[in-house]
Length: 319
Ligand code: BDR
Ligand code: CA
Image (cartoon, rainbow, N blue to C red; front, side):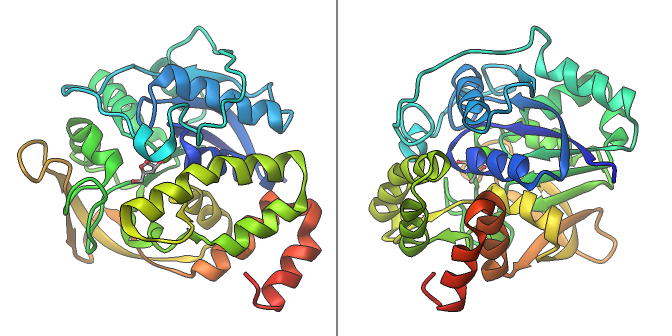
């Protein structure tokens, strides 16, 4: 069977790294490239972090393309408070910069031209690169088979302000440009569903017991995230937003409602996603998720060598 062609547009980032791992480990995708946007960390550090995952999984052949350093119009604010100084939980794996000469923007444009209606873009960071692409060519994003975005909050509290989620808050002008295109191929995974994706201390302990290079990586990079969640909101464990987009693409574990979406660019509501739910809405917005199923699929995919143990832990209701 032909594998689905995809572009991963990410800002790794702890949860972005987990999304990248699950994408590779699923073995279901033809990953045409990883494009890195500034978000959790600047795009240079993001490229280095993506390469660490590729090295870990022995997939160094996947090309990495660097995007811009800054948001479209406003001052850049990273999320190192959440993801650690190195962006992946202060584990400080050696930094190596292995990137393509081509800019992330040009890579995406050329790929969509080459494979019209064949490529899924998973956009798990700020929408800077996608906005810049559409400023150059208003029609180009129509050529994506789907654009699956993690960002925004519809009916729940934000994580940067009462109304704004980080990916849209950090570059609201870009988010607005993308949603104002009126595209019909966008699916949005807001905090409404990703907040439910809590990687619990028991799951993390199971991962530690696996004692492999990969399990150590997952255990180590999530430690900082766990501490952040405790300090910030008295949550035990950590919320791993981004892999939900991948796991749902593979397993359909989310329910959607249609909506039209606009983004607030400035002022007290900066980055708010205004989600107007209605049957004629152009964007599919995730509103319900089976989080147990998410973790079954996610853990079995990432730790497919320990699948029996994962199943057993679910059966014994220990995770
Ligand atoms: C989003 O912001 C980032 O910190 C995460 O990687 C995720 O994409 C959640 O608000
Ligand atoms: Ca992200």
